[in-house]
Length: 148
Image (cartoon, rainbow, N blue to C red; front, side, top):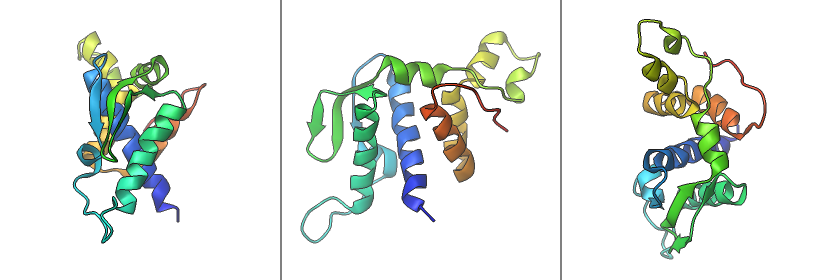
C-alpha cells in the first residue's frame, strides 16, 4: 500500500485550504501547521514526514496550483498564495446531497457545494478515502465526478 500517497493527498488538500482561507493575501505556509510538530533526526534534519509535506507543497507550486517567494529554511513557504488555477479548482461546485437542500439560502448551498468545503469536511472527519477522491478531483482538469 502506498501510504505516502494518502499523506500527499492530505498535505496537498490542507495546504491548499489554508491558502484558500487567506486568499488573496500572501501568507507563510508552515509545514508544522499542516502536520503538527515533528522531531528532527539525530543529525538535526527534518523528519521524513516533514520532508514529504514540504515536498508536496513544492510540487503544488511546480504544477501551478500556488506561488511563493521563497522558503523559510525547511519550515515553510514564504509569501504563498493560490494561483488562478488553484483558486478556480477549489471554488468550483461539485454535486452534493446536502448542498441541494432548497431550504438553505442559495449562498450557503453554493459554499457547501465547493470542492474547498467538501475537502474541509473530509479532513475534519478524517475520512481518508474521501480525502483521496476529492484531492484527485483537485488535480483533474476536466469533468466533475459525483461526490457521495
